[in-house]
Length: 55
Image (cartoon, rainbow, N blue to C red; front, side, top):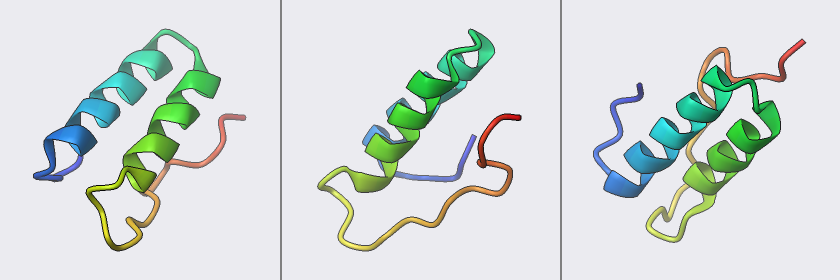
């Protein structure tokens, strides 16, 4: 889990982890995009280490 203090970020991160555990990497990617782009952020949040594509 990240150290984000934003509740929306935490929510999207939890949904992303849930989707990854279920094997739905497409949905996990969608939640990561939503987390990084939601309107409460005025600056870009960098990708998390190890957050690349699944092999």
